[in-house]
Image 1 (cartoon, helix red, strand yellow):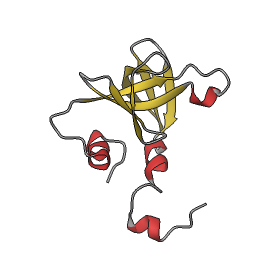
Image 2 (tube, one colour):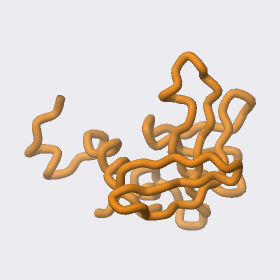
Image 3 (cartoon, one colour):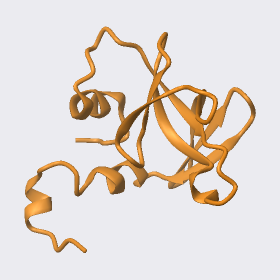
Image 4 (cartoon, helix red, strand yellow):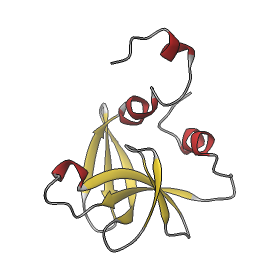
Amino acid sequence: MNKNTFKYIREIHRIPKSQKLAWCIIHYPDAERPERCHRLGVLLVGTDKAIDLADGVFIQNRSDQKAVIATREKDGDWYRYISEDGFVLRLPYCFISDMYFSRVYSRDLMDSYLF
């Protein structure tokens, strides 16, 4: 299954089809850990909840973390996510697959060496 789709995200996180989803960029104001400053997420539209895809957990908008809706554009073997506040996050096409490969049972997982 293509892991770059909302269908996959819905199945993994058990989100009903009635809940509208949107790509988002989650801003974490953490100058000491720059790798956590901007992360790809999926916003549950109409709520203050989003999924931080790298951590695989639901988060809530609050003063120290904010999810901003983003559009996704294909850029060769990459995706470019552009948030409504103008921030751009460029990630490889396989980013979500890489994040979720070892979190969900699959035949490929059973046949692979895990670090």
